[in-house]
Length: 351
Image 1: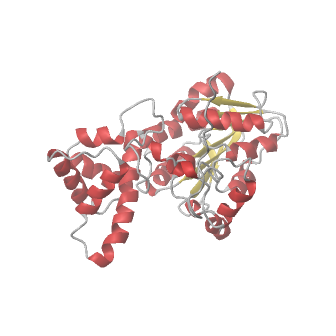
Image 2 (image 1 turned 30 degrees about the vertical axis):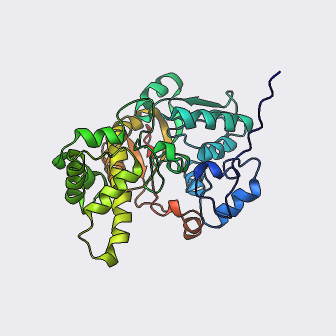
Image 3 (image 1 turned 120 degrees about the vertical axis):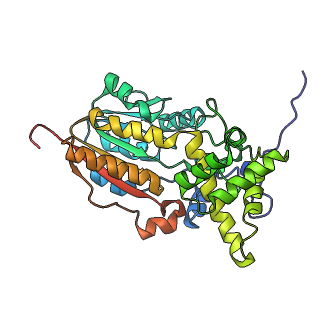
């Protein structure tokens, strides 16, 4: 019988590994709890994990009771879902939605291993714009949560192409099985369309310069198929800036351009608009919804929708101001800094 050669697992090179696959301890939180806590204490998010934001604020508002039925419209890593499931104390049910077939299955398995099986949790691989379909079968709901941020495990995995910091394919699709990649969108778009995308989706101040640089590079036969290639084109576009300002400007423009492309590739504003339009009708009378946003475009849509539905009598109360994570949470999790939370309560017959 042929012996299978032993394959040694990847190990840290030195004390600070940079490659995603070398961070094997961070990628195994159940086995290396001390390492995970050490990384979190430093204010970083362990590779392959996602640290849930505003957990206390969300639970304080939703006031989840045993026996209720809820919807986590954006399951992600399942951190918020786990906390909400614990509030049910084994009675009731939560439905979790996610369009990412890779991460949603991992999350289902992880939560199942922690005691949250199909008797109390159902994970559905679908877009949260289709909440009316879920509600028709399982609703209406006592509470709904939507965390609109991209999960850290998606950002950190270079194979998904969400970050300019890591070399990887320029993909940016939340569901890598459907739709066009960011690289394909760049090829098929003209200067005006790209400039408009960058300005509207992420308020990029150098939208025109970057769009022109992208189109010119492609016309000259250069490829923009990877995250690194796009970053280099952005760097070239901003070469006119004084050297003292350039490094920081390139960093911020990279963040904004990648965000704008991700929003476009996944039709995020259209999906959010549809979700908000259907939202009041999937809630029970007195039902509660909390939404976390991570940039101004999302927050504007949520704020406008909540105000219009309050005026129309669909909501009996909405948050007057945004709720932000505490300074302590932001120091522990740098990705919490841009978070805004808004909430609404469905109107009932007596409201």
